[in-house]
Image 1 (tube, rainbow, N blue to C red):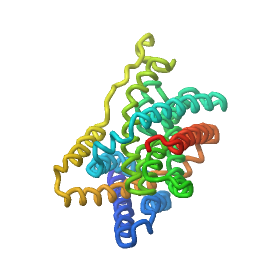
Image 2 (cartoon, rainbow, N blue to C red):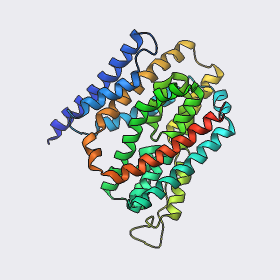
Image 3 (tube, one colour):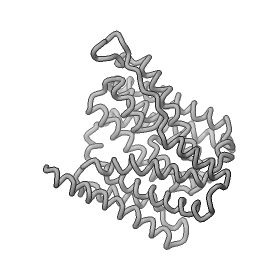
Image 4 (cartoon, helix red, strand yellow):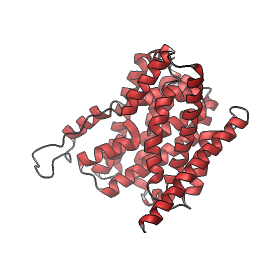
Length: 333
């Protein structure tokens, strides 16, 4: 495929993501609030159209570029008081969730015969921060390209399912906004899926889930150090006696979110700016979810086979159930 055709295909994908996201946003503003499940609609339309567009990597790039901006803008609607209000119990739940996700995924992977490196990627993707954890850990354990692809496909499949299933289930269970936000923040895999799942429930739930997920993301560095120390695959290819040392970096949008929340707490910005940021962040989330749908290839997921999906299903189910039991027991209330 020529550079021109790739560029043209990429532009069509970008235009489709923008049209879907902004179109759904306009529809959601034109009807009564709550009447249009906008995040779910954007995802489903993207999934439906994705098979008609060639894979160029543009949709994935849109997610990487726009989601951090949306998260920072969400911070303007959040105060530091809300962050503190989640308390040590929620932090303990995040840590417990990391442990549950890692132990269950690694155990199930071994039980069903999933190769060690793929099992490690699935465990990190489930427990920590989805595809970001997978991509970050892959060079440390020297994962093969197909193992990375299998892990990403599995995490994407169950994260997408969470966007569709958890919001109506949360309403059925009678969860309030804080409870659902904590549940989604701990129990769903990738950051984009957490944001989409929680905002599909309500805006306050989305804000809570974003806080919880960013706290969870901050543990990525610690977990990667553990992988580097404990994994038998984490050795330098040129000097086998040396282990690969991960680069410990907290994503810039975590600091951006905290800075925005500080501005919101100080009421340093005019109300009109905060209101505008709310609309822009919602529109960006919808464009991101359309891009997630456009970049998802259902055929590729079927090609992964059953065993990685068994690992993902059991691990995410256990993590989700632990988080749900905790919020029903009063964590974060």
